[in-house]
Length: 319
Length: 197
Image (cartoon, rainbow over all chains, first blue to last red; front, side, top):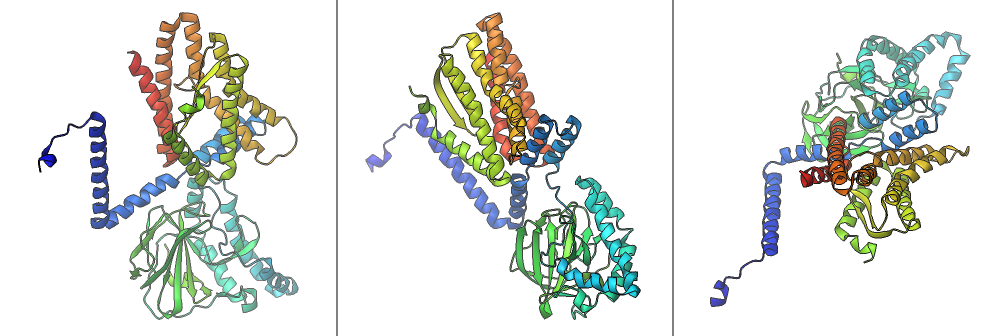
């Protein structure tokens, strides 16, 4: 007892350490408490902090641009432009390509042969070219994201045109001309659904020029352009089966619906739901972004029946 | 005392963490090129120092960068040793533009050396450019007035540089790995301005 009461004066170093310990404990307890009682808020903070940590200028591109200027390959002005681009708009890249890898030129060969062989079928060629061309307009643009965004909004006016060509494609694509896992039919879903995002259609379902490889590839979803941060609603009731991030899709999530249907939402700036969560029609699940291979903020939306891709255009109403 | 004694483990750990983070964000090629450029830079300092008969009294590797402390040189020789680091970087950049062979990452290496060389020549504490100004001022005006003048120039330069880095980070919404550089430069600026007035 007596020993316990003995006062031992702390040295300054010990005092400092004690204060450090107390402060650390307090911060730890505060953070744990915040995590427990304000999970939504902490999730938001976590997302923005990791965003800041991950958001990065393209150092390699900065160095390359400077290197080109030093070796006289490019003018100073061009270099300044490149450096500015690399520092402030790191997510250049390309408009969402045919993200789904498979369908190669092989799929198109019978289509081409069909077109070449029969003069009467020539009518749909311009339609396909048209879809390709409007895609190419976006692809040829410099990667500055504002410009692309502008283009994407403009392309809303092309929507009519695209819709027409798509209708034509629908008539002309017979089963063998389509990739195996694609159906152009308008099936009855058998449940309520809503449009996940109101925006302008910037790229439709079907063949189009791959923005990177330059070949025609199948685009398995719809691209709906909208501002970064715009709320993405869930298509229908279901369960979130995957939340992830990939180089092409960026941040994406997949929701399973009844009857073996599922929907995919890609290029999001953030996903506000978690894997395994039950979601309802119209519930906010993500926010529009331009993660992955995208030139401007938009949602890449896919609709599947089991393993078969359906054209989502029949189930959404766009501005 | 061996110069390696001044390598503090916490600083080293910080340096490795920053390097790893940078590598995760930017990939191996840039990281290796940048580390090599930095190594060439320090090697330039060190070799010149050795050749001119100076002594390395400290070497530190921290999240704020690498630093070589020396002593025992006259002003002109010290100036040479200070300028040797960025000089070697700029020389490397120039030499790399010469060969016609299309080496992979050549442009990146040229750019990295050029950027590193130019950055270090900025008149902001504690960068080489500022050290050169400090030596020149001490040489021409005498140590007291020289140090005073250099402190004002280097301190102001450092605070401006910190502001520029922070502005860039804010403008690009990220690049958090630059924060240690901004903090290091800012601390040096405050020290220079605060220590003298």
